Amino acid sequence: MTRSSFSKNDYEILAKETLFQGFYRMLRYQVCHKKFEGGWSVPFTRELFATLSAVALLLYDPLRDQVVLIEQFRIGALEHAETPWIIENVAGLLMPGESPIDAVKREAIEESGCEVLDIEPIYEYLASPGNSNEYLYLYCGWVDATAANGIHGLTEEHEDIRVLTITTKEAFAMLQQGKIKTAHTMLALLWLQLNQERLKAKWQKK
Image 1 (cartoon, rainbow, N blue to C red):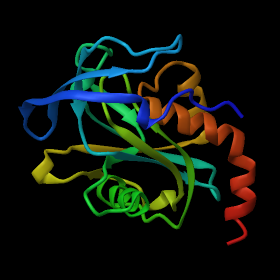
Image 2 (tube, helix red, strand yellow):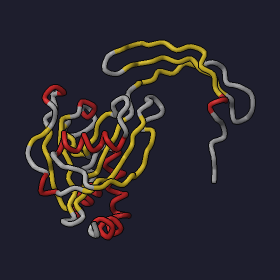
Image 3 (cartoon, rainbow, N blue to C red):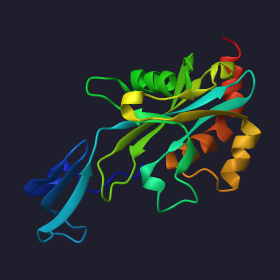
């Protein structure tokens, strides 16, 4: 198995400062690190968008072969999509002291009204390591899709979330047509295509 060439012992943080502190932070680092050809790099500067880790959950009903997605306004889509209202998985930030499993179950209730009956890990990954420390835990959760309806979200977070229940065939078609715009939703639907029959066999027995 191929491993990374270097470890946490192979770089140095020479300076670190906070440029902005709000709900998120913007940090500036001065670092140097070992090079593939030998020796050390010269010191250089990188800016980092610092946030909490995040969770995302694809809601799947194996009995009805449906997925539950949500639609909401996303500020990051203002300049990069036909509309800033994005169809995606249930997702949110991982609060300090909270486990990723507890976080996705909480988000499922808050954003869709669905109770998660069972859960499978998909991937965990760095969302954009070139400029952010966001680490995302991605899951698929078994839900009863008939419980998903209406408008959801927390008033104090100014959330206005519409629930969308569709067949897996429709969801896969949206993916193929480029209508899914978030990476965690793309990854989860691609994973479901590979694991759909296994999940049906597993969860329909319970």
